[in-house]
Length: 395
Image (tube, rainbow, N blue to C red; front, side, top):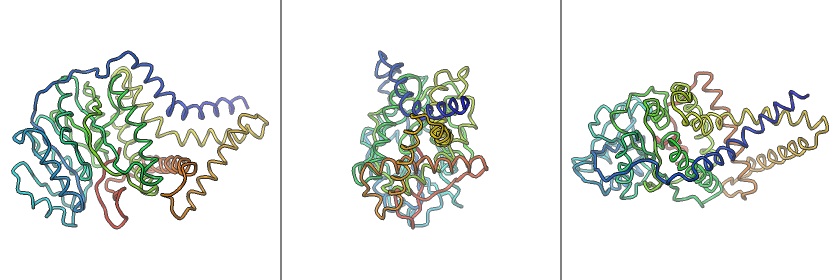
């Protein structure tokens, strides 16, 4: 029984560490450090902005108007749209823009976002490459804010802040917005300590010379930054480099997106596993293990921890009776959320446990599929209706 007790406590401690302990340690380690721990400058390198899309006719015109109007020297900015076999008029919409800075690259065969980016990078000659999605609208100074960080020669990639415009519209959006604000706080502290873990497909930039082609199964905004860390560079977060987008707006699509993220990311981390070696990547190993690997494995730890709690509860231990009762209550609330006809109008006391359980449940599915060698390289949009497919960022 002692072994069961120790194993249960360990498994229950991991989620507490990941969600509360890790941010607390980051806060302690970064106390006293300046807000910016790298050099910034006003230089203006050449920039290529790559916009990935699949069937984005609804938003691509607005995105291109936004991109071509950015406050950055026109002669230094190229906009590349890579269309992954779009068949809804996206390509035709792009061709409506007569601007020498704009290049459309069409990828046939629906090969996925990562392969599209590989194809687009063959055309990039700029010093800095910025990656974006069709629904992410940039603040006018976003490019300026991103590139100023490359004045520090140790900086290999820069991640901006993707902010939600509908963060208070419905239960799903509120939960996703709350989670994302928590993530942004962690990104800021990680950046001050060493490097922000991973990029953001909506807004992140790299030194073009550090790019290396990705495998089709790779999630580009995670594996690419890890490769740059492995080369000895830092990745920093700039909260002033902003873009704006909508949440998925629906619980089912949001949790399905989480499954895809975990499915592709855990494989990607194993492929660049040297970043988890402190001897090679220093404190970044602590960051990536705590922020990503352990978080993805939380559902497995919880399953073992809850099973152990049930066993210990039947042995008469009061603490584990409370844990078991709390678990039952959470599952009941989750079931209530699942049976609701309008989940987007759920009250917070049901929506939050429902969101937590569903996200972690789908994460398990993503892990299992990854272990089985199944990796999804194309997907349907998490933010649009089910009859319309789209390339979206996995964060």
